[in-house]
Amino acid sequence: MAVALLVGGAVAQWSAKYTSRTERDCRKLKDIYETMNGRNWKVNTEGDHSKRWDMLNMKSCCSWAGINCKADEYKWRNEVHVEWRVEMVNLDGFKKVTGTIPDSIVDLDKLERVRMKWTEHLSGTLPKDIGKLTDLEELKIGRNKVSGTLPFSIYALTNLEELYLKSSKISGTLSEAIGAFTELSELNIGEAKFEGTLPSAITGLTKLKDFIIEDNAWRGWLPKLPPAILDCEVSDKHFHDPYENRQNKPLAAGVQGWGEKNANFNCPLPPSLPKSCEATAYCITEPLAFPPYEHADVPWAAAPPSNGFGSGMGAGMAVMLAVCVMSCAGMFVFRKKLIALLVVSKPMISNSSTKSDTETPDVHPAAERAY
Image (cartoon, rainbow, N blue to C red; front, side):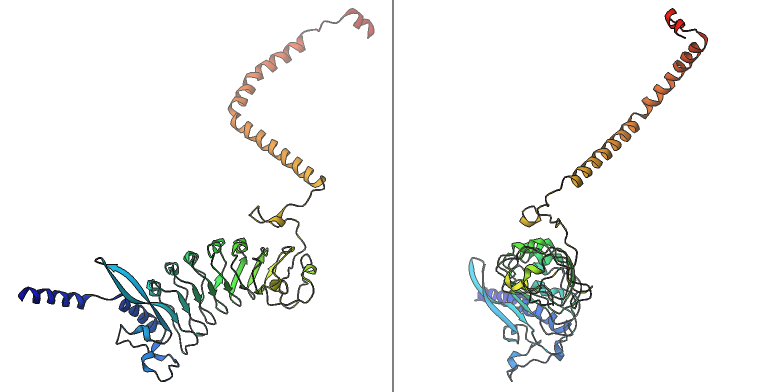
């Protein structure tokens, strides 16, 4: 009896200290609640008080508004246990959401969906370690004041299917590492603050269906785009003439849609684009003969045929320059030997000159008569 009481007491003590995985997830949601003004949120719960975020019950979060959980199995002491884990945080349209996204959100290791659209007063930056959310399939943070650049860890989200940053203040460039998003079907980053050259790795995102990048300051070359794209806005300008008319023809300066905050792509544009992308594509430069793509497998980036003169002259100049450089380098390396030779040869030259001044050269008699 005493042993049973002792064991029972130990189990009770362990239970009191044990924090379930569900409760740990709920505590991470508490960080969101406190840093994003949860006390003042206006959420339509339709009179269901169980939907409110209850900070006094850290085990009830699976019933809170915007939160969804899923059963998660794990083994402990050779037994299978099941606990509920947070797999979605959906604050779309919540009123009076302010503050910033807490870094602790990345500890929700079973999170698959993050939705924070139309949270107009949300600010700050994306968590730098967002790449830890390796199960994430949806990241939708837009129509708000979230700013800064994309943390590079984001490219570790290889299961990501939807990336929505539309109408945010996020800036900077897209990395070639975007090629890791092999499951991506939606890329919507329109009306943000992005700039620079679009990565050519976009060509390999074969599952891409939605491609919205308008109203950003893109420069350089427009890469070939995946053929499966169905919804596309390359710029905020729409054209009605055939795409072929715009491939090599620069858009006149001053035309609406052309400017520092808009896409300014080089001419020529790719020889073909998905039909959905053609109406919004334009370029602004005089046609350049050789689009400088890094990847040799881009078929339309081959160098144009040469007329012979320009390339021959360039090659000749290059050879002359190389010879000059090599000569200078040789003289520098052997400078000591050259100086020694000059010092030795100076007396010889002097003696030779003296001899020529004092001696009468042998002249053939016939030569004398010739004078």
